[in-house]
Amino acid sequence: MDERILIIEDETAIQSILSELLTDAGYRIEVAGDGLEGVTKFRDQPFSLVLLDIMMPKIDGYTVCEMIRQESDIPIIMLTALDEEEAQVKAFELKVDDYITKPFSLKLVLMRVDAVLRRVKERKAQEFTNILSCGNIRLDQTSHSVSVDGRPISLTHTEYGLLELFMLNPGRVFSRDNLLNQVWGYDFIGDEKAVNIHIMNLRRKLDTHLIETIRGVGYRIAKKD
Image (cartoon, rainbow, N blue to C red; front, top):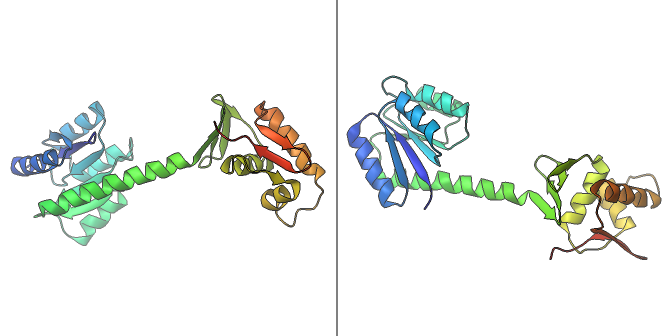
């Protein structure tokens, strides 16, 4: 397990308990005894998650959370004796991922840590699936951007829609009617020549032969090797 967890907690007994618990679970642990030390250690090396107390010397947990959030979206779990609703609302307004009150169950802490890190992995995996590639073409569905050999390419909305459809269906042949229906929509006013022109412009901008013409049928993008 490669995840490194930063525990920012001023009570040495709780530091020891959490360190032992998470180390036994396979996590690598770093401990800070106050808010200032916590921020310093956070900036010194990468972490996968932060366990953060609220009531600490030098800098309280809320301020530490604000400082971290200005720099990172790393998962943060508040671990505190403050169980009032107001304290929890303030923490979640600062975009913490979870809130556990003391005294706590060790099993619960471990389950919450595992769950938060699992959600992060799932989100990253989802983000990764939003990247489509074919040959030297890369399409990012999240940012709605396209690049060739790392060079950004400016496409019209229609050109992007055509390329995205091809890249989501490598090897599938689309007739011109298919493309008119799926990219333009059924209400498109025009003829099939419009498809030919957009395909021509798309090939020119991408400087590629990956978009193939299937004579008498339509177009497709070549399957990946």
